[in-house]
Length: 388
Ligand SMILES: *Cc1c(COP(=O)(O)O)cnc(C)c1O
Image 1 (cartoon, rainbow, N blue to C red):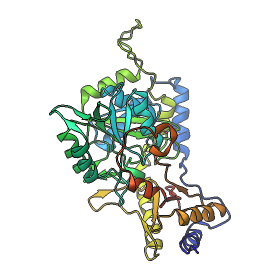
Image 2: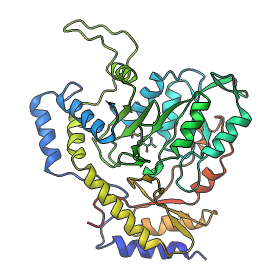
Image 3: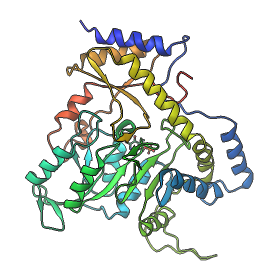
Image 4: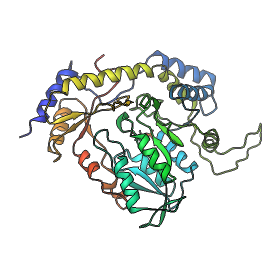
């Protein structure tokens, strides 16, 4: 008999179900501001990639995150691809990424002709486990002082892509130390962590660059959209150039100096993004209150843990997360069924990527915690205005 699922369902019902309405996992919040900016954009006629809203959204993101440069892209996946490609990740390289992430992280590596190499996470905040990674690299890899190699595949291991799961920052100091000692580039998948800080530094700022997403379910949305943050001006220039078909600047000539991409965010999306940026601080403070509400409601319940932020960091609490003690997956299934049956949307974590047939042949370390967490993690409704 499972006692946890009925109990948690009852708690969530009491907290969330004021009427019979459906409670989604995460919905965007719009008001007149979005309408106004989008209308303004349409009236200006500059709805594609040339338009003042694109520059404005980039500047707003730079100011907010403290990054020296920001390059907007059509979505987070293309931003990841462009970042990896521009960083020199290419055919037959390997990139260290968690298996416990959205598929975009792995797909972006594949688009470069490289292979993901899956690494495990830590149980507390579900980010890449630095201790386990360090031991693994020490034991199973070779390093000639310049380049890290995977002796089994004979491939170069060029980069590490930590992902700040559900908005909780990874242990970046430890990860940076490891990356530095093996000459690995660090590209943060900060798609879920706009508004999250690791030791006073906004996520995405630690390595060569960091990637954001503004998909409809993220903390702010531009319909679809992504961005690359970087403190390396030359690298950011390269990103922008390659994102805009690598066209040489000229008043009338049309010449391209590289195989570029058509990845730049259209102004119509950026207009939406600018309006959302004005509310970001408010969204974050609301989301932190939602998290506190959950924490208090669940703190005395046996058999589970609510994922709270690390003491040295600040989380945007993008998706609130419960981790059940039961590792069989039974309670998780029960809880998913009961909550979704009464209209409270909950969902499990992504199927670990190494368990998907398309990625099952990729190199990987032992992924015990990833597989264990997949049977225990559940996301609960987390919209900014929930309960307000
Ligand atoms: C949302 C997300 C992305 C990017 O997704 P897009 O939908 O392409 O913007 C990448 N990685 C993670 C972990 C994400 O959650």
